[in-house]
Length: 362
Ligand code: SAH
Image 1: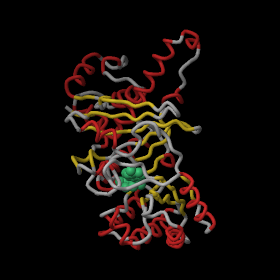
Image 2 (image 1 turned 135 degrees about the vertical axis):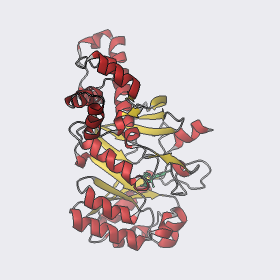
Image 3 (image 1 turned 90 degrees about the vertical axis):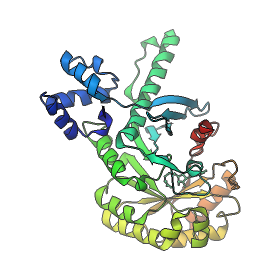
Image 4 (image 1 turned 45 degrees about the horizontal axis):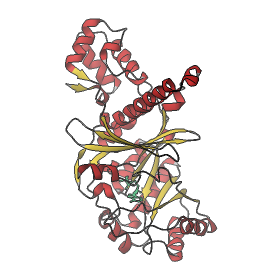
């Protein structure tokens, strides 16, 4: 049984031809799937025998919604998905003024071992396939749409109002959920091509961001292969001893290597890089940290995204006040390094990376 979501249109055309069908049927199937249909039976322009054949040999591998938390303050939804083999993964659906955005996972678990992160506490179970990454988006859209339709029905006055695509469609993707995307590069690459494809979700590369903890060789490869996709690098510290104590990857690729890779990336692509800086109380939040950070990033086309730590129980790390995060950002701005403090969405739900998944495993 194949998962169609793992297939590019070209691969699926070959599959369809092997079934003895003309290849334009592949496009019809893709159209239905990306329009929101979940079963072959509903694909009314396909001959019945093809629908039956697909039923037997293929599936639209959407993950199952196991749990969902909805923020009362901003409508952020954290969705816990179950995969076919029982693995659990998380996605976060967020509403912004400019449209809907989703944060997806790239692995079930993670082997990078960052000390402040919940996603890596139990190690890596396995890589996600590209179809499992696409599946998170399609399943989230379907869930939000179903929810909105149910709400409309329960409120008769709203019956007149049409549900607009923008109400549930995802326009922006960040690969910042569980996992290290550059530790699963081939599937990530297939995923990026597939969501960008006109036969897929048709999302502009500029609306997609991939975040890495700093796997240097892959940063260079990514710059060459996906120059239009946004890159974010998790830096979090300005000295090697501190960064290594927070992020084991730094033992392999120290700060100087990461900055050099960023420089090469900038020269190759001309694109601005986002540096993520998770602030931890008493660890990396002093004025001299801001000074060092500004010095490190001088001359780079970049932007710093300050994230006050989401506390993970038992990690021993504490968060900083929003006020301190703002002050830190102002210190950077004074040194002409653009910085913003991440807007806190879903503060009232298990928003911290990997927390919902962790809770459900115990
Ligand atoms: N592995 C990739 C992407 C997933 S993590 C990476 O490291 O970039 C996405 C971002 O969330 C990273 O910057 C990560 O360091 C940060 N993060 C992880 N746990 C966090 C926590 N408890 N609080 C705040 N940020 C966290």
